[in-house]
Image (cartoon, rainbow, N blue to C red; front, side, top):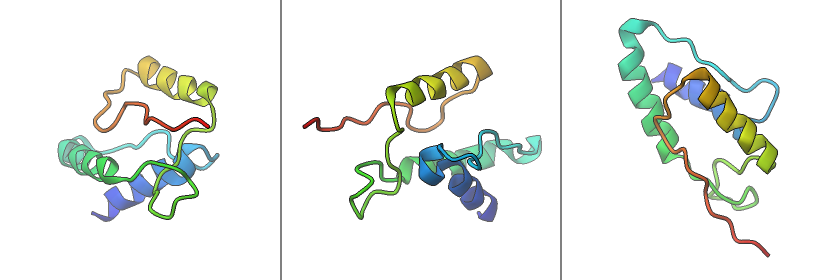
Amino acid sequence: DQAVAGACFAAFLAAGQTCVSAKRIFVARSIYDEFASRLAKRADALRVGDPFAPETEVGPLVSAKALAAARRFVDESGAEILAGGSEPCAERG
């Protein structure tokens, strides 16, 4: 549980856009399935939204360019998306 909490914090701090955000998490094969399942469940529970709203836990990426870079990272790494993966809708004003 502590490892999952730490990985979640490291990956989603400032929507993963800081220089110290986790880009890769190395996990022993023997615990990978359980770890991935728990991390995905925790990630799915994060409340995405307006960074100024008190209930928001993860804000948006800073730009369309950042979103494209994130998608490219997943595509080129061959990673599998276990949680989320869609763009949250935002009101435009």
